Length: 115
Length: 111
Image (cartoon, rainbow over all chains, first blue to last red; front, side):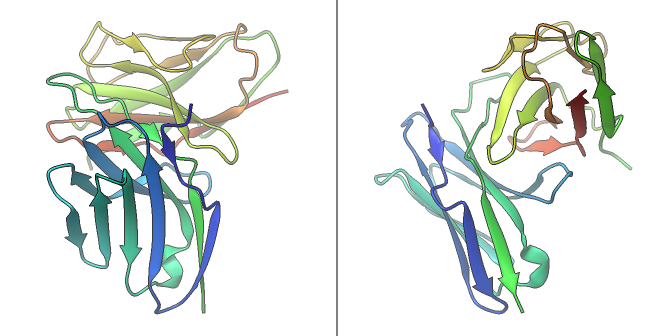
């Protein structure tokens, strides 16, 4: 059962325009969400996160939106740059009161920024 | 510099052999994790450890074993019982924030 889904395997965007990556989840216990960026043969790099008590979080060119009623989150990148070309993973967790946090990852979306 | 290191970057194994992947962190993080990535898929949790001398199975622990004798080290052994071990293996750790930080990964290929 895929608890976190990224339904678009790939996305192509022109440089300078907005990139919107989407993620859906099914587990209503998830209360913390993260986006990671990954290049081939490298570890994922943390981009931005959002807690379920918020519906928006911004960090520079990156904004994450959370719609809890729809169990949907999205990552907006504005403006898109060639260096943004990578695979983006959405991840979710139900934060424990203490101890380790188990992340559940989506399948990833490959973003390509065209000049 | 603080960070997570994994070694080796590439590893080749013959069928039937056990192999151990190294993960070291100098971030003073308590929790550490092992994930596996297969082509076209997300990361799947193999094992995790909240503190020294404690570890828990993740979603796909069969055929793997771990130890956590030191805070900074969390080695993963891929045993011959793992049916399809060829994959990209990632180690991560968490400190006082909820963000997991990842190492560069080890690509294991079974010949």
